Each structure stands twice: as C-alpha cells, then as structure tokens.
Length: 73
Image (cartoon, rainbow, N blue to C red; front, side):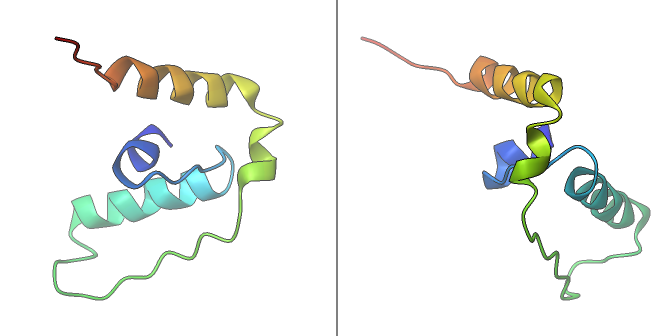
C-alpha cells in the first residue's frame, strides 16, 4: 500500500487491492513479468475498504508524511 501510494499516488485497501498489487510486485521480482511485456492492473475501487482498516490508513499517511520534506530558506 505504501509503495503504491508513494510511487503512483494510488490508495489501495489492505485486503484486496493491496494484496493484488503485492502479488504483482512479487511477480515482477520473480521474473514472471518481464520488461517489455504489457501488464494491466485494473484497480476498480478500494477506497471504501479503507474505512474498516483505519490503522493501515493512518500508517500509510504517517509514512507518506515522514517522507515529505519541506525546504525553507
């Protein structure tokens, strides 16, 4: 969830779409999906699923906030 939120700005729920993307990432790491092959991940929602997992949502938000750096001069 965190990786996808940081890299793509896409919010995933921890039950379905979060696990599906984790499987997609694992398939790339294992070499089952290789560069040059077209791969489609269809994200059909997931935001309502976040309401039942407020802890996961808060952890993702905290992670994103900690990585955001504001420079002042």
